[in-house]
Length: 231
Image (cartoon, rainbow, N blue to C red; front, side, top):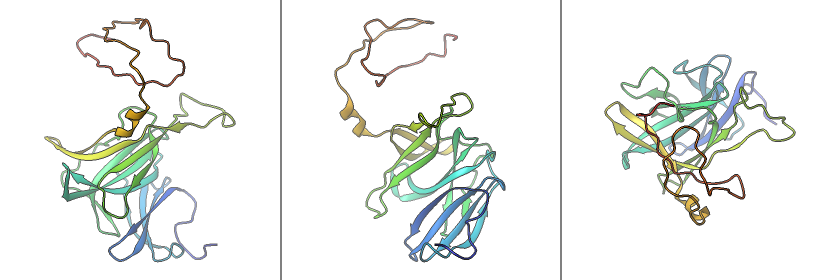
């Protein structure tokens, strides 16, 4: 039982907790959907919580919920790290912010774009969970997002309420536009591959791929798309 004042109040979504090892305190990142803000709390025992700062509104702040916070090396350099905060929006997407976190507040990096930066450009990726090595021996961060957009794919809750994306490794890379989040499927997925059942083919319009009749609706498709031809 938790008593006293703290973040347990109306309007919060998806609290995320991590241990800040510098002074052995717990940090909780809470999305306040109604205020369109992210709030930070600290605790020595996971019971008594103290508010330390707010972040936002920023980027896409509509229906903000499920925030997460983690560190990533920039361009593979472990001595050059940035904090990344992910925030789900509109029950369909997830945006991210890059900056610095001092244990109490999050500040955007210099020249951070004002427009939203999305983890995925399309829909169907939000409320992600990040798996990381809290012992500090590995730099990799693996993320899995929730795949279900209620706006166009309502499913009776008694049947299924969605499913997880494939796990992906997260990295930060520098481009001419600035530092950006990149991702790729974890290598372990290759162990699930079986024999190649498709062939190289060029498809225009609605073309049936002959010879491709999978036993199950689980397969990997390697495809390239040309922008020279209209849809």
